[in-house]
Image 1 (tube, rainbow, N blue to C red):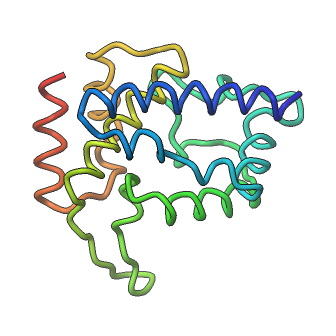
Image 2: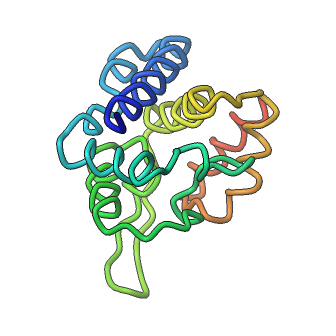
Length: 165
């Protein structure tokens, strides 16, 4: 049952992201978005994390949206799946942060198509979770922007785009 519940959410999320990508003229990105979530590694871990052991994904989504940083559940399988996901999907800002050691790293500029897909992803997640209002995207970003590591020009572009919503 948990796998079906997660599949339902995942398909809903992909649908909404696809709609947002199509609005941007990004057909391929809309089709390919989050395909790694169908891999056994990610699918099983995500389903168990959000829907296993009498959990419900929406229990862990505050009014500010889900954030990995704020997740109270310690789950190594999910952490492994999350790392796999962000390293296979360049629309995640984490993909563009290169750690050189525990104290230093390089923050790369995101190409425009991935910045657009990232915003489409944020909107698609909110719609799939049943709580999307254009003003909420701005609110969510303002609450979470200090946790999101972006290169200077990437941040300027993201903030400019979000203001237009």
